[in-house]
Length: 127
Image (cartoon, rainbow, N blue to C red; front, side, top):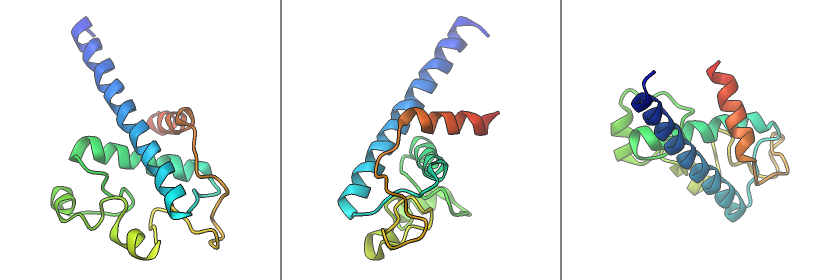
């Protein structure tokens, strides 16, 4: 790999990490604001936040990563499934199990997640 390609790869990774951190911060703030909690299994939270960050970077919006779409760009414009999605905003129903109400058996007791843990989970899935 040439130096230019290496620099570009580092730049892309830096941008991905910034978007990932922004989505982590959003998720933490939204959980606290809505009195919801992350899943008792932290890797679920990490995978969902990573998926939101990937969609934010690729599509310009944090489209729900837990659904199948025929046309992701059209769904982004529709906004229904952009996080927080309409079911979450209206009824506190998060299909991804990112934001879980305290009465749900899968709710953990955390509203924070370590960025390095999210990166570890992401990197373990890439290999």
